[in-house]
Image (cartoon, rainbow, N blue to C red; front, side, top):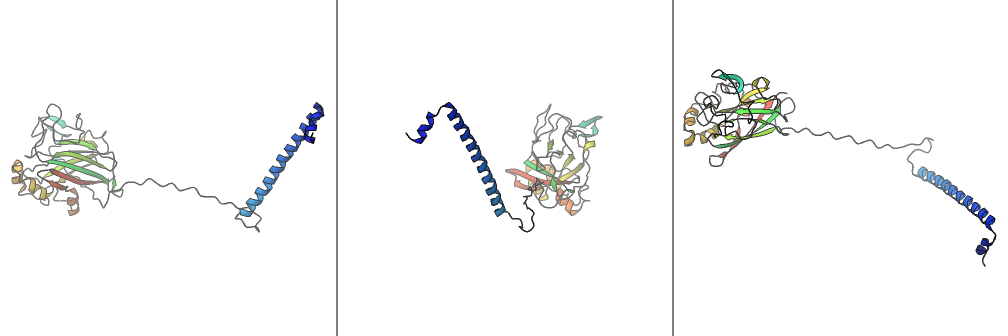
Length: 295
């Protein structure tokens, strides 16, 4: 037999002693390996280090934490003009006046928050006739780099094709009035008809700005009341149609510069208050306008 096989013939005591010796040898090997790893690792780190050997001090390089990138604040393109405060006129239905001894306030009516303002809501559902028009309003902060203002409420109202106002001239109707809230881009869009023109005024749309929908319940909470001017060239086109015959005669003697509301504003303000409009009498019109407020 080989020497390895002979080891099994020396009895239990011999085997136990042999197992003890082997265990000690294994422990020694593990300790030796750890020592060798520690020494070689230290040597490797020393060889790769970037510190000066003559300084006697170890050096370390700390990677700076990345600087958080701020979330950009959306801004409107171009410059913006603060819209002037203007009268809300005799037909606002915002709680500021009365008709036949009763305060008229459509702002607290269910249904006033809507995008399409062509029809009445409530007891009447009549729809105002006239050329289809959409109006997108962008609200910006003139004190904040023209940044869009989200979450603000805007109330608009205007006359029909014959220059009549709902709730006053037409007490059974409340059409051509609506309230909306600006989105993340400071915008909201109303669907309406092209406003008519009545004697003594340049064609216009009234509006009021409120700090929130919750506050848009009465005129006392508004932060701005002003008016939009309809573009003269489009007015000439629209009022040439038979449906707007009465507006055509009233518009003939009006201009934005001679108007008793728009006339005393600067040229820049008049331009900012005038709706930019595209379209035609067949397909309707699309208007855009920017309202500047100081927040």
